[in-house]
Image 1 (cartoon, rainbow, N blue to C red):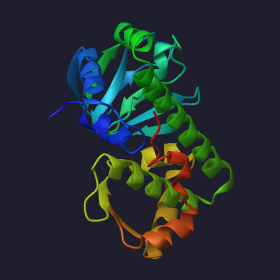
Image 2 (image 1 turned 90 degrees about the horizontal axis):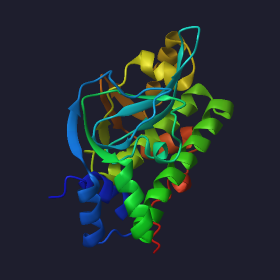
Image 3 (image 1 turned 135 degrees about the vertical axis):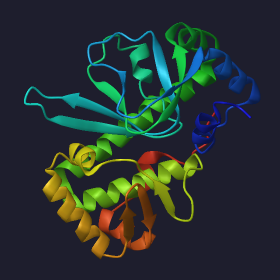
Length: 241
């Protein structure tokens, strides 16, 4: 079985990667490593020479402020390139940290350059990775600016469920999401107290149950309605060559 299976699954819902192209991606990986939780994979101000593909686990893209507060600007799941853009944007303007134990594959930029020079379809697949990241970021901006906190949390749960379903990381309408309330408050840009109150309000709707790391979707239609969730921005089931 391909070690890059999560990435292949992710794009099977959007495009076709041939066996030959899978082999090229496999050969581009220089190493696979295990990383514990709460570790920086990429540091702001660094100049990476490889991009990191997340094979298992959760990571967060974030910025630290001078007042000691942190804003998480993206959550990456199994199958995501967490810093593909570092191939072209040389100096990182943010950091990426693990939220859980992670397995990552390192793809040197020299190998990515070779792919872009020789394999036009794989180049478009890699480009699509960054476009989907941008689409998710736009939707997060809408949530931050216009959705209520309860709706924002509901939207995040809907999004994660859809993204994890594609890479076969959901079971019986549920998934594991190893995030603390402090980390969730860094996603939402709100106090832990306010986030806790809104989580209780969302649970009270009967749409979800959230115990420790396990989120169970009890009523998908109700959760979608609360979130005003439309997964168009995730661009699933769109095949092009």
